[in-house]
Length: 191
Image (cartoon, rainbow, N blue to C red; front, side):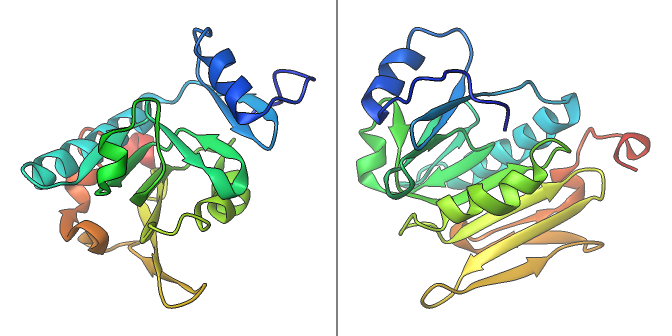
């Protein structure tokens, strides 16, 4: 997450109106707007690999995957985010135009500049989404996938897929080989 773009505090409606006039994407948290930065090629590649696998797997179901250009509203946190990949199976989200609110799966790909935020404040906001069943963090450099699955109450269980041949997205019943997740990512770049 970058520095706030504006000194003026905005409400959610003002943010949506303002962002519609901007060339670049920005996230919104409790009145502050934060510029989105570009990503490394490998980040975009891994996000595309996961999106493509989800899209193929979910074809013909009520579930819809989205890649980083679709906004997510977390009303309880007064925030709008752009997750790298997310899946919603909620009929209300199929009618949405600007943002979804009920994803059951969110995937974030870590970068040096966002890892602490993704693991901390962003995950805290995401946990307020009642529909969310899984939150996934992907560390490209370590070839590691950390999958947090909602348990009863406020508990989340970590499934760490470091050194495993694949990972299982229980929320959409999809198992992916690590070679699919990291396809076209050169080992020398990820080391």
